[in-house]
Amino acid sequence: MQDFLTKALNQKISSISPVSGGDINDAFKIVTESNTFFAKVNSNPVSKDMFEKEALGLELLKDKAQISVPEVISTGIIDRKSYLILNWIDKGKFTAITNESIARQLAKLHKMTYDYFGLNYDNYIATLYQKNTWNKDWLEFYFSNRIEYQLRLAIDSNLMQKSYINKVELMFSRIEPDYPIILPALIHGDLWSGNFMVDGKNQAVFIDPAIYYGNREMDIAMMKLFGGFGSDVFKIYDQIFPLEHLWQSRVKFHQLYYILVHVNLFGGGYVNSAENIIDYYV
Image (cartoon, rainbow, N blue to C red; front, side):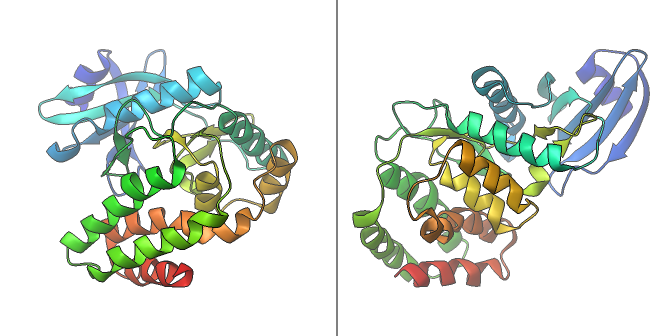
């Protein structure tokens, strides 16, 4: 691996050590004479451009919204292995400062808007393909690019019954009349507690985005799905950028996408969770 990462970084490496990087990639801390880096390596040919899209997402978050993300050093493919090299983030301590940092940066991100929902390229959430075809209407975008796509993937894999296509269509028809008019917001797209870090100044640094212009309630829904965010984060966020009326009633609706993603990644109990959400709204 040292030879591979030496080629990727194009620098002499003093040491390499494995670090936690999730179940999808191999991850390493790289130390050179002058700097320290974080590297992710993946040998899956199906998602060979996954790191390229992640790098584009990080750069857009940094350039467009000017929120804290790791600096992209290099990305590419060598010997059929894709890689992404970022600057190393020294870990700090989660404090009240961190809560405020998460809330303020997230509100700043969500205030970035556009004329359409979507993005000018498709990307990934984890290893799963994420369609970002432009659409003026959020519910149409959410149905065709998010829910229907993941649901059909689950059906094709025999994880869910085909009847849930009709149930989802009914769910959308019942939600649509009371759904508020919203503006597209630039969102992280996969904001669970494992996708931000705390740096040496106790500030939040956002990682592993699945960005697009969407409904900002998607980020809030994901933050509430698996926990890990204190109530102060939501309180401060709402003071800066209040959410739409009755947003709490739509949390499960927006969590459905992330549950379906987990159905297709892990199966198991997530299938029942997805079915329960659909049945709840039907």
